[in-house]
Amino acid sequence: MDELNRGCNIVNHIGHGGYTGFYVGSGRIGNSDASSLTNSPRNFILYTISCNSNNFERDSVSERYMNNEDGGSVGYIGNSRYGWYDPEVPPGEGPSDLYDREFFNIALSESAYRLGEVVGYSKVRYIPLSQEDETAMRWLQYAINLLGDPELPIRTETPRNFSISIPSQIPARKQTLVIGVSEIGDHGSVQVRNATVCIMKGGEVYNVSKTDASGLAEFAIHPDAGELDVTVTKENYHVYEGVIDIYSPDIYVNPTGWWRDGDAFNASETPIQSAVDGADSGDTIFVRNGSYTDNVDVDKTLTLRGEGADVVKVTAADSGNHVFEVSAGWVNFSGFAVRGATGDYVAGICLVDADHCNISYSIVSNNNRGINLVGSSNNTIFHNDIVNNSVYDINPANNYWNHPVLLESNYWFDYTGVDDGSGTGKHNISGDGIGDTLLPHPDAGYDNYPCMGRCNPQMKGDLNHDGKLTSADVLIALEIAVSGRYLLEADMDESGYVNALDARMILQAAAGAIGLVA
Image (cartoon, rainbow, N blue to C red; front, side, top):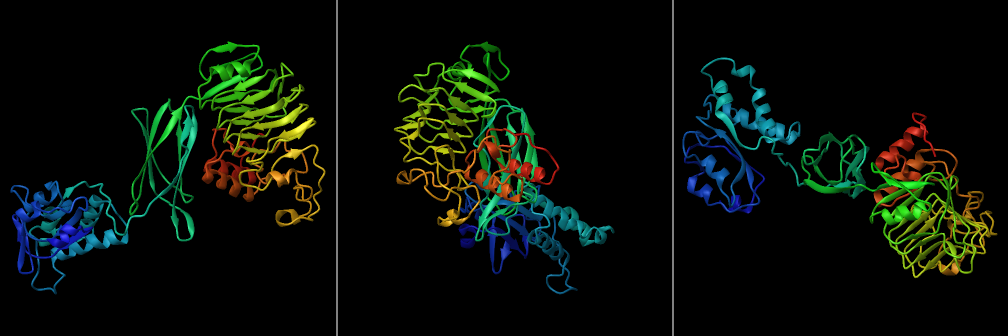
């Protein structure tokens, strides 16, 4: 009893018994003993070959184990009538012993792991020996019965923890959701194959998939806004339960107005600002190609995604004001050509008390100041062309002017260094497109990897900027996905986040299986 109360995983009993209990050596564990166990939540699975302990017509000991609210078992396999031994064969070779041993052969070899499956398969082995009436083997096919959930997984080792790669948010639209399942072992992250991934949202979404050899499960979904429940299970792993927030973020802008996805068109002479005013925090604003004349104040957490700096041009309506002024944190800004803020002390892009923003894939040109960061820190600015401004940047310290994975940053029109390999570290490589001398603003501790050539436009998926798609780009995309950061050129399906599906699309494009449009 002490051992049972300490909590076991699987208990196997070989011995005599009846519906009121079974014998253990010279002692006996009866109904009252089973009801008094206090081992919860360390409940066990119990298999016994004793007679009648699982008798359905009586108040049997099996029910006491299963109905004990303070402990007992979560699964009970035993005989509802007699068990059988054979005095003519060695111990352990009798009919009940054979079924018992086959149960553990299957469970421990992991050929099946759900309790009902294992009980069933342990009987299948002996169907050929159960054909004749009035034999012990045929009797036991009917007498051995399971109490408990047949879907219950049997743990045969200490359960491990999953490491799950899922987005915290997804937009409410048609998309492919990819969930990555791995575990962190002694030698790093290892993909988990054949894990069961279930996603559910009320009566709207219910889908189950197994992870592939890469540890990925894919789902084609088109959900409404709300919460998507995610459950991941596999034998000998702890169950993972998580939630993905589904939001309706999409606002679209063209030169004549804006509209929320699925809603009415709103005409406007200043459509970008009007879209910002109509957006909720967390929304994504997609700005389509065209020329815009506007001064835009961004005072909430948004993602502003231009279709590309080569096709989305925003000129200051008032040259004495910033073209874009951001006063909220966690803003993502990419894909714009910004120009025309020529008045004193105004900038193409100005961040005021705004932290953790991303500015990328934009051209900031022909302004009094290019990028101005006022009281702002922990912002990431990379892959921008900063060209023909009177002052290229101001207040740059305490921010990141580099790609989130690669040691690359921005193109500065006034940069006069050379790529001759005369520096140290990455700067000792000649001709790699990274400036090695006269690094911009080294006193501020940033932008140590200036680009020698223009950053925009950029081939989509070419994450190491060598002009081609290779497996190196796939690895970079996976690193970005694991980090949880966002990079426009790695977002192949334009889902608003980077995951393993984007890496797969780059791999397919590198092999020529699909084409990518920048």
